[in-house]
Image (cartoon, rainbow, N blue to C red; front, side, top):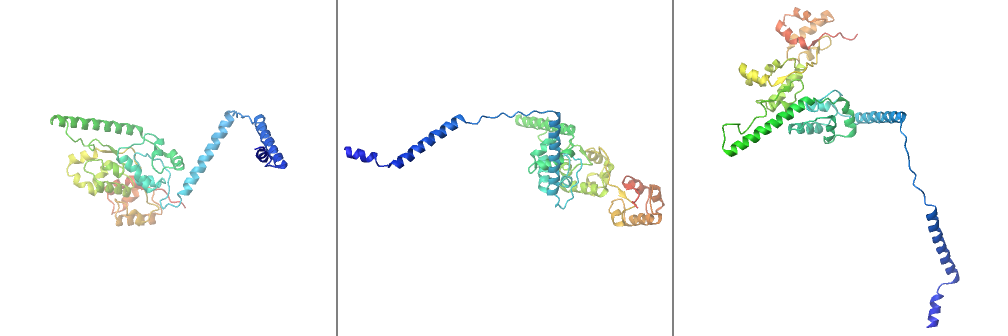
Length: 330
């Protein structure tokens, strides 16, 4: 038995035992060093003052401008020219939204959101739009103008309609039929701004469907903007609804113009083809204006058009809001 114990002890040579001892010493030394030389946490104190805040604000402004430039560069390949302008996300139509740089599917999502009853109360609500990136939001932010009063009025009308509908359901359930009707049309109380209303909003008017809404928008674009609500009488698709004065007043009462925004006809620079596109001008009248301009070189006022036999006084009065006598640049 003693011989076996001695054989187990002396399985390692002297050099190997020396190596084991050195390794143990190194391990102990490492533990001691880590214990005594452990790095201490350093607290970072940032002192802010007016100059640092101003520098930070300047840095943020620079970053915002870079993001805007990157966003415009990203959408520079679009076939629709980007035109930054003031817009109300609760009223802008699809063409306006796409001219602001939104993709067609983004504009469609916004219109669907509004059609389902959604409204934007503040600019930050645009971030909820699917596909709205930070760079796009920062670029659009300075141009967002929301009519909060109109939003509040719309929400009040929605609450009223809901109360009426619930009352009608309760009455029908209890067997009463002499009070509120079972269906309350949401179209009868709708009042729209004719200058900015899109097809989705126009279809909220009783009697106006998709086709008539598109014809109203098309006629507005052909005119260059409505100068009066009475011009709705000239839309052919609406004429079946305007059979008598009572129905006319009922339809026109749904519209108003907060301001007149006209794309003018520049008679001193436009060609015959462009002039005749206006609904108030025929080819003969456009050609006569063009020939008069060639003889007079420059047209300066509306009275000069009265010398043309093809233009009646009624034609001139209708054209008055749309004509611009701005001089051509030499």
